[in-house]
Image (cartoon, rainbow, N blue to C red; front, side, top):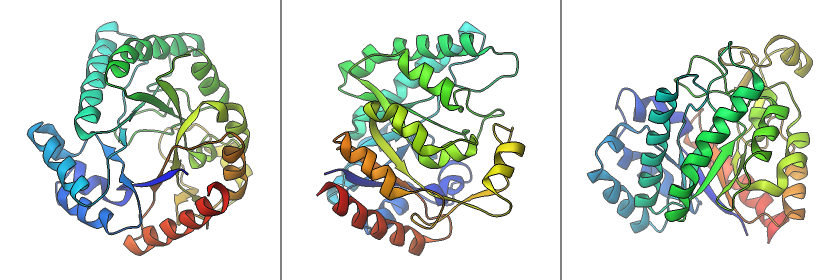
Length: 294
């Protein structure tokens, strides 16, 4: 049976930029939900002090939860090797952070889609950097998970491997027992593509999942594909919403995952409209998980 986690999507500025929310406050909120774990973010302001790591782990575990996944954003597609070396060092630091928190999964990305970068070179640079990090992760029993991502909040350009063909080519280039896919169905819409088509192509590599949903504020999916697929900046037509109320077909998604005997973590990215929304998303996912995986 997969396990359910939650990510503080609604509180990222408060936790990572202005410090108006403390991590302990997020722990208190999350641990009242019917979830098994809390997905962590390397950029929480209080994570800069390594002494806090064991404190947060204890707070979570004292509430009967765990911290299974670390969300972080390495940028491996910069043409300057010295820049990439710094990003590799950051990733190893985040692996250490994951280990200290008791986690088993640490995210990697490809990097930014810089205009001057060719597809072949970008794939090679990203793959080389991930390969550099894999032995370090394996020594700590941590699996690196690459997400079909859209864009980190603090990046100039969208994800290099945002498009399905590029993402799949990068995944195919890395064959390692401590490497897998973190599947996010909503991000596929931001690439102007079909999330089920992507899942069919990578389902055998999926080890974790982000549960999210998006809805169209205006226009159609065809408008999105024509106007905003891969554009710099967030797509204006799409917004995060309550899970089960948006564009994603969770019956189809869970059918495919069940056929593959998926048994990993599902982490909720929701709650941008309040904790009640997040609570409803938890209820929806618990019901679906019981229906398909119990």
